[in-house]
Amino acid sequence: MNKALKAILCILLALCACFIVYKIIDGVMQPVRFNKEVDARKKVAVQQLKDIRELQVAYKSVNDRFTASFDTLKQFYKDGQMIVLMQVGSKDDSLAVAHTNEVKRANRGITDAGLYKLYLQGDKNLVFQIQNKIAVKDTLFKSRENFDIDKLDKIPFALEGEVPAEVQNVEMDAIVKKVSGVDVPLFEAKMPWKSILNGLDHQLIVNMVSELKDQGRYEGLQVGSITAPNNNAGNWE
Image (tube, rainbow, N blue to C red):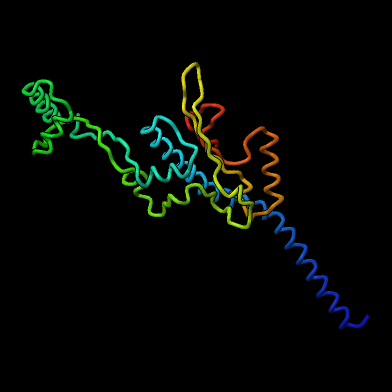
């Protein structure tokens, strides 16, 4: 074997060795990268489920029930109003509390609405609570610059064409169920992992989902439950 051929073989062997080492390292790092991406996507999906929960609770405070319709939730956010309890003055301000008691004695039977009228007329040294109606969109998520109500029903990362259309949307349901003889409104919203993790390693997703199934757990993220009342908790909490 001449020197040129031996040199070529040595180079080929070195390249093969480098390739094998690369594949070994890549095989070790693949689950690490996968888990890191799972954590990042989970954070986004959990925030969206929390938003759904917050909006559902606000909707129920006005309508005494939850809704299974995202269109209804979106309309409620855009055009609805909710009652909020406004605290005027501080109960820790002894002078203001004493002044308020004097006003009540001088105006027997005066309600908080009456105190509010006096407050608007210029008496700012009053302490009381009053219910006000405020537009939902001026109350919820107001500080969230990137909040988009029109995407509330879309699962993050479940891009069109990548997963079937039926699993691109958040699954949501709402019922009224008898619990200890009492009608209890319940709701749930779900996102399957196979949609949240769209585009990642298929086998690692299969393994993750299979493990959850074996444990008898939902194969995704869920908030609330229509089968077992849980105070609207999320399964990540």
